[in-house]
Length: 226
Image (cartoon, rainbow, N blue to C red):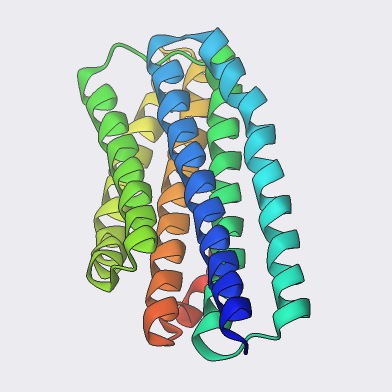
């Protein structure tokens, strides 16, 4: 490949990664704002999260088109192909994280968290864990940090434990006749959305490991995640 053409090609690969980074930042912000809206009951903030989801969706279309164009024009191999493939795959997980932020925001108008300190603490803990996993997985991608990506993978067990505690706490409240069940049941879905956000962060981390090592460790459990 001619030197000038190679430089242009490297620049194009960098653009793929830049677009994915930008998309990831928007999705992380969306999750954070959706939880802020939930805890504060801020319907307008929730509506903004839902409206901004279109921006995230536009990013994935742009990234997919750009990746396909690169494959068609350059016929990449080895590491270059992994850069394109992981950009494509990671953007899909980011888009789903954005979708779950949308789902959380959509419930804000119809749900109120009961003034139960234990419940509030555990939902905040679940939210914090999900946000941390997303942030670290995106940082791992940005810096190609395999060690950090592996740290995200090992956080998944803690995330599952927090989700289980959240689920059982909410289930007990659903059976409490003094509490309006209609206000509690949506929280079960929110907990599930946060747990899935964590799963997608793990997917991203595993794609980072594949990008740098060519090891497809995610293949064991990738198909079980939604």
